[in-house]
Structure formats: structure tokens, C-alpha cells
Image (tube, rainbow, N blue to C red; front, side, top):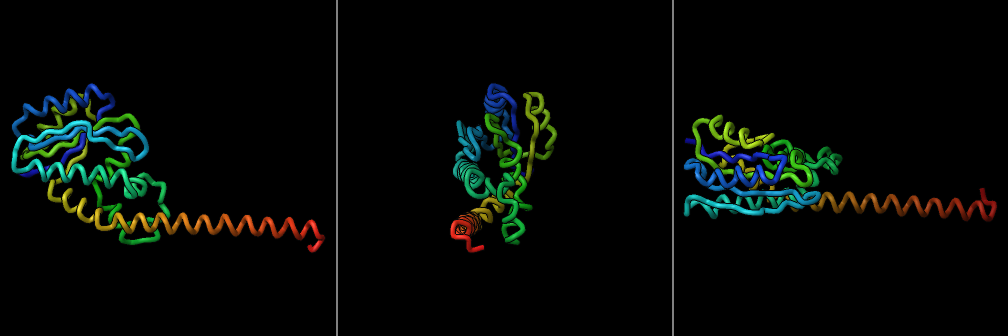
Length: 196
């Protein structure tokens, strides 16, 4: 059996909470977390559980890291507000294209949405999907837990680079704005003293 990470988005909080509680009875579930998006890039882990003592720290750490990354500079990047940066830095572009579940969280969750993050041991993906769809989930995304762990590790390594790119872009934009104001002031002074 393969260990997979699954994200299921629910249109209503009550549906997500019920599905989350029902997962506690599913013996294939290793752990699950209930996440809401309260504002732009403001993810909150409302509740979580683990069914195995030996895996709680791992999945909790992966969920926490994923939420932290999406709530930070990578969330801004995935959200498209820094699209120009993707073209400017090939490492950032590669991370953005590789991050299946992280990008899914950043782009498919809207303010007020609730998602259930799940780590499951499964050999038939459709079994869990059927259960989640019946509970009202739409959409659902999945990838292997190993791949998600690698995504999180790689994304954490470049999160600092993304933050630096954001700062550099803001600094360049501020410089252009200052130069524009200076040029306007020069034009105003020239007009006042008839120097044109």
C-alpha cells in the first residue's frame, strides 16, 4: 500500500467537519487536518488527529510546513501576484511548476473555504475519493506522501529566495516611482521658470 497525501476542498464548513470526523473511523487514515482560508494567504489549522503514534510528528510537521509555506511568499507566488518573478528566476519557476499540492492549496482555496488534509495508506484511490465526494468535496487532489515531503523540503529551501525576490521587486518599483516623481518635479520647475 502507498502512503498518499490528499486535499479535499468543501464548499461548506459543516460538510468538511463531518467528513473530517468520519475519517477518524477509517482504518486506512494515518492522520488528517482541517484547514480554513480566513483571508488572503491566511491559513488556519483548526483541528487534526493522527491514528498512529509513530507518524503523528511527521504528518503534523508536513501539514504545518505546507500551511506555513502557502501562507508566506510561496502562497503569493502561486497566487499569481508575482508572476513576473517566475520568469525572472528559473529555480522559483521550477518549484512553482513542481508543487502539486502546495500550488493546489494556494490556487484552489478561496477565502472561507475549508479543506481536509489527509495522509492515507491506500491501494485503491477511488475508495477514499468516493467517500469524500459523497460528503461534498470538490475538488480533490492527491500525491504520494514522499513527493509532498520532498516538495515541502525543496520549497522551504527556496522560500528565502522568494522573499528576497519580493523585496528586490518592491525596491525596484519604489525606485521607479521616486524617479517618476523627481521627473515630474523637474518638469514642473522648468515650466515655472520657462526653461523648456
